Image (cartoon, rainbow, N blue to C red):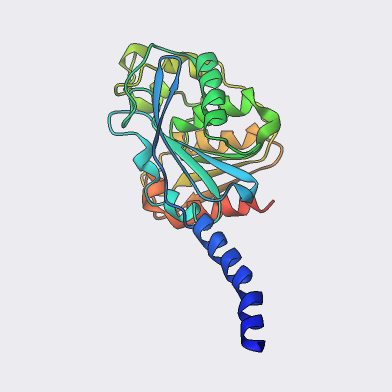
Length: 252
């Protein structure tokens, strides 16, 4: 009788533990979500019970897509709800009509609803993804807990100058039908949430460093980390530093 009683008490505890472990280690489930003329490939994983959704914004160009986060996404998903996706014309998302920041903000809001993102968001933007992350923050300021910018573009240097072209039509956006000029023009110089800037330490020009330091002015609560052993692709070169930075933001 004592043995049976012990097993009866222990079983619910084991079931609860197994449920928690499965929730934390649940694999990503790629989805195809239609938002007007956008057909978006998106993956979300990890426990929503964490209370925060980490939203990852990739850069722009021929090879820029959600695989930027391959070394970050699965590890974050062990303990956090995290989403990555391909913008139209990038990765596994087909192209769509040309769009600017207003359409982007509206469609991203619908996409977040479709994947049941938490009301509190940590936005992480790499390169041009810093621009898109900032536009999400501008359109949904009360939902944003923190923004993390990874060697992100700054309007103080400008996209054209950063890519060494003379005309906006020559800016390398890959297959994305995104109006980069409108995105840059519509950026706010002030954000109402904390901002953390991670800057590459390798091949760091004086102009790029100045543009990164100017990003500190975006928020009254801002900080910068120079990632000494990383080039521009910080999520791939230094994933552990990215993960630690995100986890620190989630805990505050």
